[in-house]
Amino acid sequence: MDKELRSHPNLDCFCSGSTAITVVKQGSNLFMGYIGDSRAILASKDINDLMVATQLTVDLKPDLPREAERIKRCKGRVFALQDEPEVQRVWLPFDDAPGLAMARAFGDFCLKDYGVISIPEFSHRTLTESDKFIVLASDGVWDVLSNEEVVEIISSAPTRSSAARILVDSAAREWKSKYPTSKMDDCAVVCLYLDGKMDLESDYEEQNYSSATLQSNHSGNAGESDDGQNSEPSLQRNYTVRSSEENDSYKRVAAAAIEVEGTSETVAHEDQNWSGLEGVTRVNSLVQLPRFSEERQRP
Image (cartoon, rainbow, N blue to C red; front, side, top):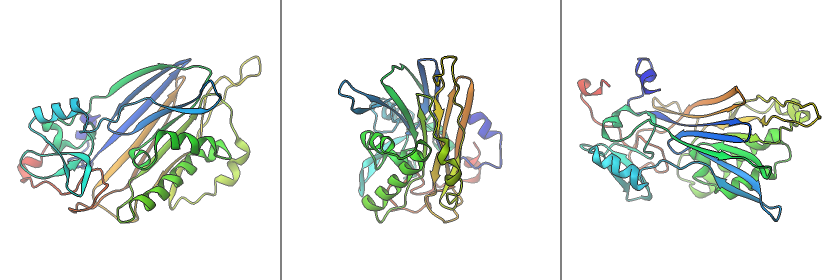
């Protein structure tokens, strides 16, 4: 992916980039590949018939010892700002910039010589009948909602096709409540129900949902087996919420991809992101733009 990004001169990825998470389901096998801090969780029923959340991926952030060790070995620096002590960031060795809040990403070429990599992590899980749905989401959701809260929100959605939108709306409200003076991070959500059932009756009314704030992509294939049982999982409506209405030169792409039994659905949304101003908290990067000469800017 980095090689492809470098081959497109019109894409300025020197100080911007993307996380990514992909889930592939083949029968009862679930394979995951991911970089950055987008996350996948699995909702299952326990022996008491209660919904429980299991995190399927690891948030690849600079606060992980193995990630921080690699970055420091490559002369990058890892530290948190005084007004944001809970968020470790990656900084250039010669400048307090750009302050990237993840250890792996596509793009962000200004840090690729200093320990930030685009090599994904992979994991596998065998699904059981107690597993009900999977949620993929960008860090804008996980920054304000716990795994358990996300499972509760999705489980209580009135229709499956509205679940992703309701989760995005919930995350947006939490951002405004917890960080009223901060810009809201982008929130991208994909919900995959594992029993293959669909609720198409609500699709017509939801097609008119405002696209000024939320953008939706809808795809779902539910196959029916010979015995009349739905055999394929269903991909429900996916939503991304804009973080602001400002026009900013530097943008970050929040991407989530999911492939099911040979067919794939990809959600990639390019949103307004953060002004490169020092002192703006709760952002992914670009707290301050690095000072490079023109020669040094060429990747």
